[in-house]
Image (cartoon, rainbow, N blue to C red; front, side):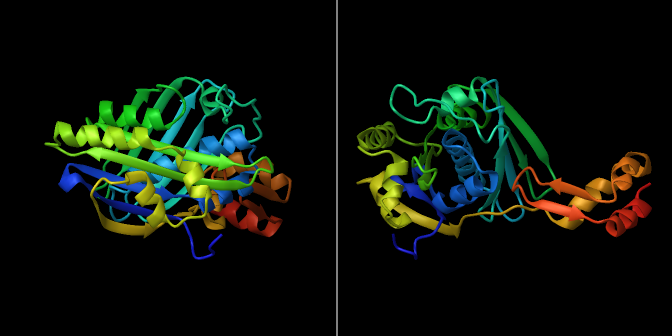
Length: 295
């Protein structure tokens, strides 16, 4: 593989402005999440798709804006969360990282069964301070279909999406990527037909295309084919958590003195971040200092 290849997000327009497209290569960041959470393949595929989807949606944001997607399904995965922002940073976790399921009838990782049915919730945090959440029923639990269903029903934007994560038998993440195409107001029926035809003509899954070790430029070319497109923006993508020992300490302070007493009696504490599995250790001296700050 070319060592110069890295995770990126490209944004552009299609067919003389009839549609907007986003392509994200996310192989490295999904591998980072897999390593941090020690996930089995089906959990890796589910979280990888969800984090990639979060980056696709966050590509339309700006500045410090961010997006959170929650899978509130009834499957054995127990739900999943991914948080992405306009800088191409993403983090996430699943409730049951060690979940192992047989392959589905198509011989692929059974993400739909792992997720189950339930709600697909999207929360946006905007620069103007507004925060809002929209929730729609899941369509399949396969995530790409649920993402398209959300965009159509909550944002009234007809879209097409592909999300893929290829995990080898040794748990190695060989390829992960996503494609989102959104129709813009006034899109012609001819353009819609061309987009549908192009997606249906893809002979390889998006994760297999990415696993070949090609650059994002080549991924874009293979996915969009002969459709005339323009690239408007490029940004890097990476797994990045916002946690720190200071923030974790603030969580302990929020317990108040009464809630803190039992922790203080142990003379040490270990807290783990859900999103990145980072472990934070506090000794007795540090705990006393935090206890003094607790009201």
